[in-house]
Image (cartoon, rainbow, N blue to C red; front, side, top):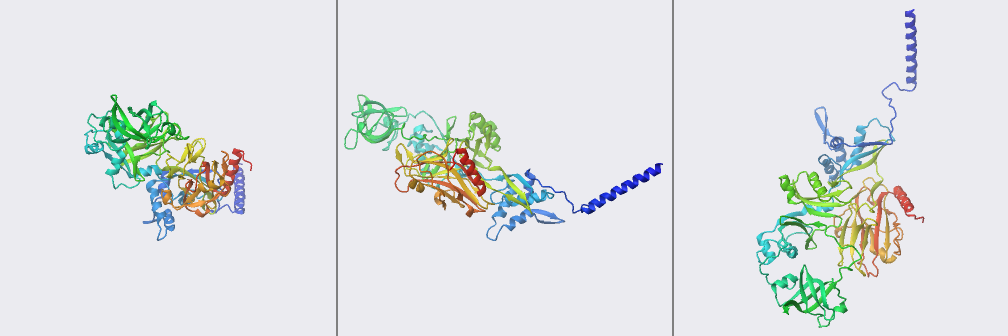
Length: 620
């Protein structure tokens, strides 16, 4: 009975196996050609350091021989005898552990995906996150031309005029710009200098040297010279508006001005509208009247009303002086042939790392800047605001340098030049990059987004472009009732159009004042694929407005239209917004406000405009 059961079981198994064989034969699924379909449309992958290293690897092994890797072969195939840019840039991938502008993920990741996921089928879409080295900001790059200098005893004597003081006071710091100009005569434009010098609030007791024609009140009081001198100060206590008798105040010192006239001897107080608190420049002679020092024969030169000079905010000095144990440090820059304290309004603060930080570490340089300086910033600025940018000058392992930290709402993040970028890849007959958005920033509430500003002509103004959290990037040449002829540029970071097909630029803007005809001359959009770092030496292409711009009658933000960038497919471009009222007369200077910039493929731009108009309630 048992044997019979075994026979039945054997026959049943044989029939089942025959049945399966017939099924697999019928569907040709019994050999190595069979693969299950594997299509993924929501796949993500993040490249590791090892992944990036493998892409930057030059050689592979075939038996005992070495051959160029597929990545090296790809880089070589994109070079010519005249241009080996891609190959040179590809070799940087291994060193930087990141892709770059000329050796991008769009070129090399498709080959990596083919090797990593050989079993995936056509139709698969993968979002790949990868490291990209964009380089440090232009602000940081500018500090690559910085040197350090410490004033010597001879330098102090030169600045003081041989008085022998071995430190500077606040009034004498103003002489540092001339000192730098006379000392570093071969310095080139953009040169930076970190000065270190002794500093004190106390004035030395030694006798003042002979005065120059222009001087301060304190210098004149000390020298008591009776020749004519020019002084600038604040209008203090007024004794007579008819005769123009008042006290001229200057850093705590004062001298009584005994009557103020014009060059012809006419009284000018009421005619010029001089008021207490005005900043006034005049010339006169030192004298003593009733045992009081006075400025006699005073002649009016000019004055300003500091409380009503501008309806804009006063410029802020972003450079924080570093003073420890009577030693002060500051950074100066050579611009337009003149040395000035370094300033950049995109920064919240720029300062030199205090010497006490090095002393506490027992070191002369900082090797772990992210940790050390990040900690210093957290302690020093506990109430930092989101998006604020701090530039710190310090001695690193390679000498004097500068880096930026941005507060992200929680911590200070060092701007290393590395970012985590994301790109979409699609598998059809092979893997290809699917790029549609190349650049976007809202400006409003999100900062200037690494845009830079260059003023070509200020006509006495402090700035033209500025960032306002509620309105975006704004430009104006109207100050205190005067329309100034100025030229200022707002310049984008680099925008890569490596895989673009039909890229367009669009943005929203408001234009108030001016007039439609002049505004078209004064407000322009520019583009270049060869930005030199200076708008005046760059060859720009004008992108005319496709639609009429706002007529200047209101503050309503409207879409500026679509600007075709397809001429730059495969290139890296820089876009700029030029505000230029130096063309013709300036009857009414406009205010230009820009927000919500997008550079993308046309279909995405159309959707962006549709959504932007809906957000603003624009139906036309």
